Image 1 (cartoon, one colour):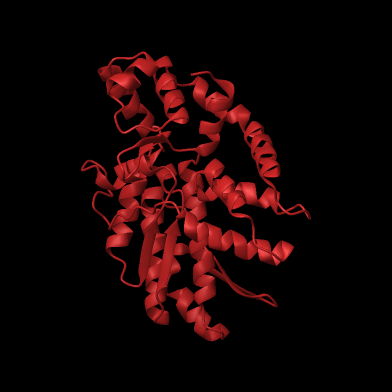
Image 2 (cartoon, rainbow, N blue to C red):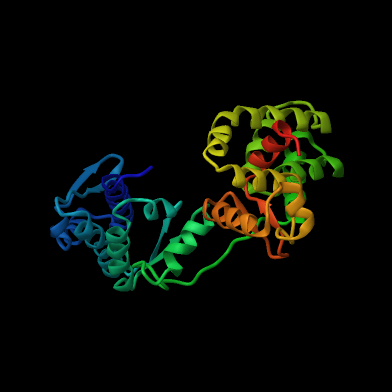
Length: 305
């Protein structure tokens, strides 16, 4: 997990890099830009690799972050160039003990920036949504929210066949692409993870090959999957195991209740907890599913239900 100091270091290093990339070609023009952000103690170095700005600040995190981000906006304005700053896996900041102070510092800079746009993204949708939707959080309603759904099967098939033609000079059989997407459930991370391994082979992909490679891959992840599952209460494990076998849009109905051996109120509580942990999600069609296809596969392989 990130620390407050690491967050500041990451922002400092990346703002330095962006400013270096934005600098004009001549040293005198560069120095003018650098002199305009003296509060950050900038140091301009010139080498055969080009010009580089190093920034160092001894301010507190709450002062350093807005100072850095606003300095970037100032440089963009002077250079008459816009830029986009992307905070990936941004929910990690929300998990810090000092999250409110860091979030407030970021908000201060974002609201005052005219030349820099910001994108905050992450894989843990519940935590990320909470940061921007909770009225008690500093980032409440700071920006527009956008949910990026998984890539559809048709798009994946087109892309995988393009890559197959590049590798093996012909398209994949339809049942092969279907199997890849069935096992990975169209999850981009796992589609990439599985296909990276499949594309290492000189031989054309077969169904047996896909299943073997996927099984080995998930078993390699088994230690951390088992560790995550061991931290769940018995009720949560019952619910997530049942969902790994079959998604449901009636989790509090009689059929599902009998399958997991819990009453509707117990199921509701487990669903809420698992959603907060980003282990399950409710799709647009109303069905509750396990979020991670590797976890789902692991549960089916190592439990009976």
